Figure 1 (cartoon, one colour):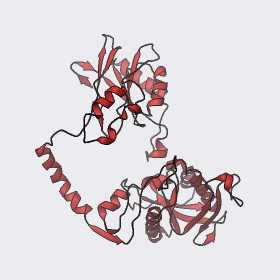
Figure 2 (figure 1 turned 30 degrees about the vertical axis):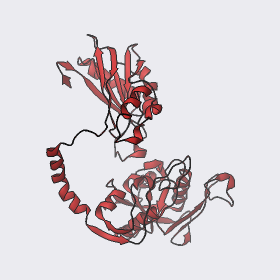
Figure 3 (figure 1 turned 30 degrees about the horizontal axis):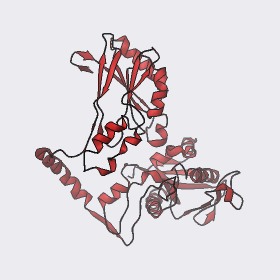
Figure 4 (figure 1 turned 180 degrees about the vertical axis):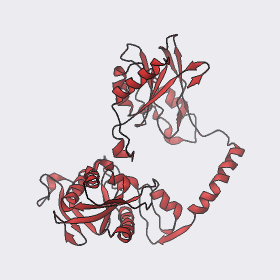
Length: 376
């Protein structure tokens, strides 16, 4: 890009965990340093000597990799929502507004100065910045370069977004006009419920039950609906889904389309696949082992599993040596290792998302049934 007669190169790198947290399709993630340096070299070859790298790896990784980069002047860090700046400045800005009390005193969360000044592989200054999360800080870095494009200084001009500015009436009306047909669709009632289905995500330390750590009513409901749809389309006998894909509660009373969309906002499609009994055992063992990491699978009523969250207190003989799972039933029958089971899930999990490689392998197995129904 060109600004005020100066040319700047902007390149990007993304975490190698991308296939585990998203559905990138055929995209392959290359090495941070190798690809970053190669792309920076291409820009320098066409005369661009001020290069900014946008990173979705996380601040701790970025400050580690900075010394290995060549030709890069600035790293804009993201992914782990790191807050940078002096505690004094952060507290002074967040403490000046009464509209965001949760942010007051958060200077203690700072990971260091803004910008973090390091040295790249060329021996030149490289600046690393990060602007926290959810648009609450406007990251602004003022940089001076010498004639050859090397960084001289970097100054923090970031500002806390307090939300105290007056609304723009014209823009507010335009947003309302755009939202009107969306609201009409969101308000369509699709059912009623006598009970609530909590969608809390849960935490690991301290442990709080949620959709990413234990079986839940919401997870059962969504999986049951998936199984019902897949039974009609492909005669699936059970279903499961990733807890991380469930994003909101369903409260008792009338249930609207908008509420359902809030629970499942990602637009994933329904996959149906054949798994061997051994695949199912490996899958459920992997799920039980991800309780602490938030990768626990929710499942329909046709799929029942017993497992030990604490191996030291595990009684009985697990189905897999050293594993947590002690029993698995599908449609009321104990899983048989050589038997084929037709199960349903979503495209994210089917593609190996959250580290469930057994599903991706099953879909790639020659001659094995694996179909994207296209049902959202």
